[in-house]
Length: 176
Ligand SMILES: CC(C)(COP(=O)(O)OP(=O)(O)OC[C@H]1O[C@@H](n2cnc3c(N)ncnc32)[C@H](O)[C@@H]1OP(=O)(O)O)[C@@H](O)C(=O)NCCC(=O)NCCS
Image (cartoon, rainbow, N blue to C red; front, side, top):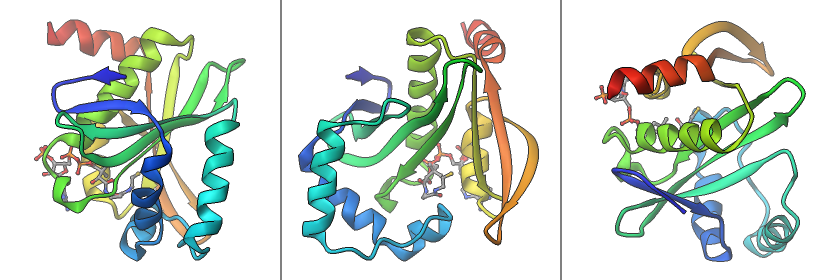
């Protein structure tokens, strides 16, 4: 469990399944995330969920995002971890709209970056977000990510962003 000023990142648990199902079957969230809308039943989802909790993928680490008083508001992850290249991709979703635009996303991203750069040997974290998703881009910029290119994939247009350990360390030093 990692506690920051606004959020707690913690391991995923079975009790998160209902929230996660609600968010993954939400058309607006799927659109903002350029993700396919989940259509499977909750019982099927739950059985996959249990498997993932018991046998997590080696190249991915998932965290729930809770408020300081324990409300589950979203999830964040790093995945496609490549130890040889020293890099991984970051993903985040604040599923509960009541918590958008209040700094919870930036605090969760900063917390995850701090964990990655202090607890792993990874040196570069990258992500993609839709060109049209100004809120997400602003959130990532606040955390030190910089754009490094564009990608068109499956009919979606993405901005690519990255941060490396050196930039992270410099920003930490400057904030002291
Ligand atoms: C993207 C997301 C993680 C950001 O988290 P958040 O808690 O809302 O973000 P923050 O409050 O830390 O930062 C958002 C910033 O964008 C700003 N913003 C919001 N809408 C904006 C817009 N249309 N144009 C420009 N800036 C905008 C906010 O004012 C805020 O900036 P500020 O702190 O200077 O006021 C969260 O909103 C989310 O999960 N949204 C739904 C799913 C989604 O977009 N997924 C894609 C993720 S790649």
